[in-house]
Amino acid sequence: MERWMDIQKLGQVLRWLGSLLLLGSCASFMLEGWNAFDSQLRYWLFLAYVLGLAGLGILLGWRIREDKGARTLLGLAVVGIAAQFSQLGAMIHSLVSVDNGTLPTALLYEASSWAVVAADAGALLLLVPVAYMGFAALHRPEARRLSIAYLLVCCSLLIPVRQGLLLTGLMLAVIALVLWFDGRFMAGTPNGSTSEGITSRLLLLLPMGILIARTAFYPQSMLFLGVTALLMGLCAFEMAPKLVKDDAVGARIQTITLLPIMIGWCVLTIDYLSTVVLSPPPVLTWLPLSGLMFALSTRACTGATQYRKAAAVMAAAAWIGQLMTHATPVTSFLCLAFSIGMVFAGFYYRERLLVSTGVAGAVFAVGYHVRFAFQLYDYSPWGLLAVLGIGILLTASYLEKRATWMFGRLVMLREEMKAWH
Image (cartoon, rainbow, N blue to C red; front, side, top):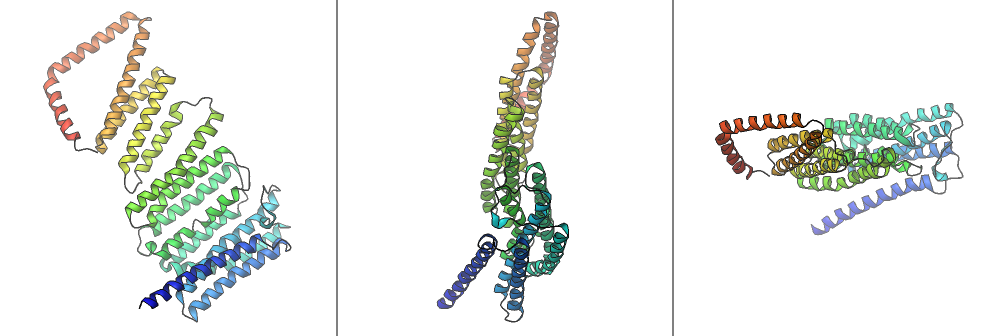
């Protein structure tokens, strides 16, 4: 029995080795030793290679009845579809732009006319059944939807955009499509959590990986780099936990994805924002990050409390820093309003740190209000004294009637907050 298990493990190792060799063959096909052939010949040879992999997989499953090998070959054929779309996209780009960045010669594909591109695009119809059969081998219940979604995402490789915010918008559209499809049809389903289901879901992100890899050969702005890193981190934060069954593992994955999110944010605020706004105030740097952390807390597998605590600390630091560097009556009022909102959020989520941070921010803002009030004393002393006198009298009247009730409520609240996070 132990020898049989060893033979099975050997078969798995050999299958992985064969798959890696086939992927290496694809890379060698595109990168090494093919410069003597023109773009059209390379395109059609690679198309024949992908169709050959699919045909071999079908033969292996249909005639020999070896399902695992058939799935492996069909899955590799699906991977080749994205590369085929990328080659056609390079031909389209050659007709609209002469800027190839630092792309190596082996990755340059040129087309002489739009008629040639149309003929090459027509040949892609041969890959439609390949996509369907590949996903049917991996995830039969959703094979049709998966193949349609995959081909749509691959179409993004045909758009001749290589730089700037247009490329960012294209990536955002691809991410939105993948996340919508995964959440609508795949996440939470029994077949979607199997190894084949996870593989089929990850294949939808393959064109996005090609888009990102392609940008490395073109000069990009800091705005693009920051937005792209931020989007990739958010995409991984949202999708990666759905690929695992254990919430603890999902939480650790989400913690790791915070790194590209923070890198993207630092690039945007430190390298890009400083070129648009001279000495950007704290509310333009830390406060949006606080809002982002709060939004992530609503999508976190576990540890949502920690995200909200980090958001509260960042928000308090942003408003306190704003008052200390750009103090105006408007900013002190906004700080007071935001701090009161944080107190209400603390009561809603039953978290002490949110309440205490909100109270501290409110006290800080009131202190600046008092400071501004004393500054107004020089302009209208009688008005300020009148307002203070009326306010003190109203406060005294309220305390005389409600002092006992307020003290009791404070005692009850203190005991209740001991059980909060």
